[in-house]
Image (cartoon, rainbow, N blue to C red; front, side, top):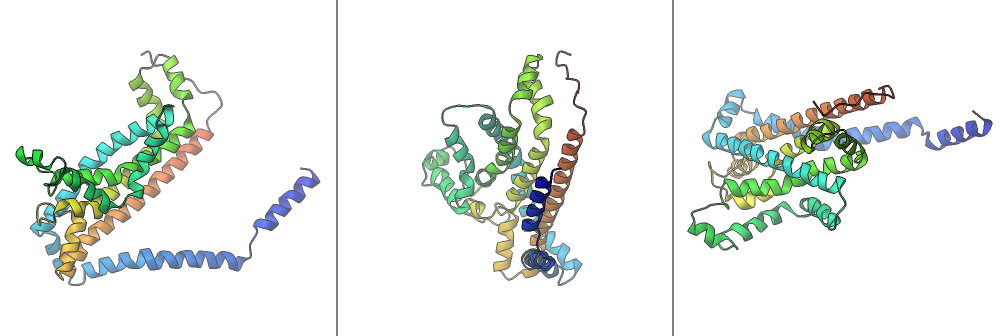
Length: 301
């Protein structure tokens, strides 16, 4: 290393080096913020849920309306997440792999749920499928219920959770390019083989990460679901809506018991997110440690 390089490195270190007290202050502020706005609220939720003992906690969760809310939340997530998985992969593939007229507009549509209030999203579905909506008379004539029923809840949840998977995959696919897919096709792979053996392994960690976030949002969604559900107790209340009803009725232990399940979901999501990021980092490190020459997979067998 030349003398000029040494001086340049020294200047960079001098610019970026900070006093120890600055680092401690920044870390203290970050930890204080996390404790005040993350740890403390979670602690309050579990403390209030168990305030009258574990027996009262279990009784609150075993109530028929609570079980109905839990079951509806799970059903909604089990329908919305797989559909968003298909939609997200399709949208990301189209945006990242192809050039076509209207691509920017499609990208904007993917981001639309991020900019539209969930309450507005719910009102849109009421306007379309409600009794006085565009398709309301036809739906009533054919005895089809969407608003104030499970289909409306699922539609609203799909709308607000649509961007999560697509937004994780689009930049990932764009950074990877098309070279590996084109090489697989040249080697005789079909479209399905190319996706299964080339594209999917390259995007699996981003895909898993997007599914985790999508599932967490689907189970915790309140605004859009509140508008389309009708708050029919025991029928169209998800867990967040059930918490609101219990709290408004001054059943604090029952409300915080159900809320604790949502808090546990958030904690599990955080753990899964950390595991996925750790596995992704290990996978990237393994790729960088590979020898320069690696054999190509044959697609003819």
